[in-house]
Image (tube, rainbow, N blue to C red; front, side):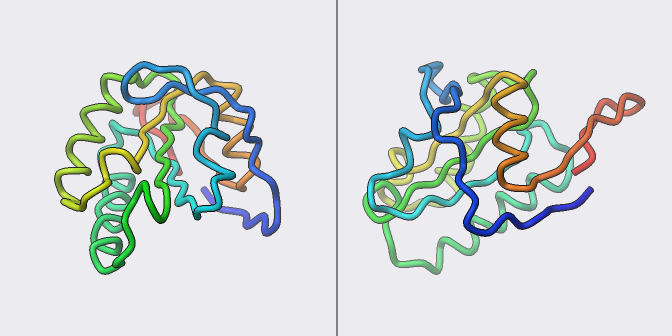
Length: 140
């Protein structure tokens, strides 16, 4: 699959998702606060690449002196509409612990959602993926 850069494109902030606590949120709840937002698109049960992406993010952020929640937000969205807030909560716990930084619990958000909002978000940022029916895994 590929990634098509869409520089200066607007992410649709009205899109509904569910956070790791089961609370309904809008993507815009994390944007527009005058802080940068790191957006990662993964699926939580990915057997390979998504784990590497999140591990790399944590390793990189450990070198950044800024505090999540105060200086920036991290929004991780699953592109698998079958994944649940419970699974998102497990991933959050794992990565917040690994990151080990004050503010990570409040500043790093793990979201799940329905197919259409996921499609609109991934399209808006040029992220391409497809479900491989044979393996049941996503190609991305």
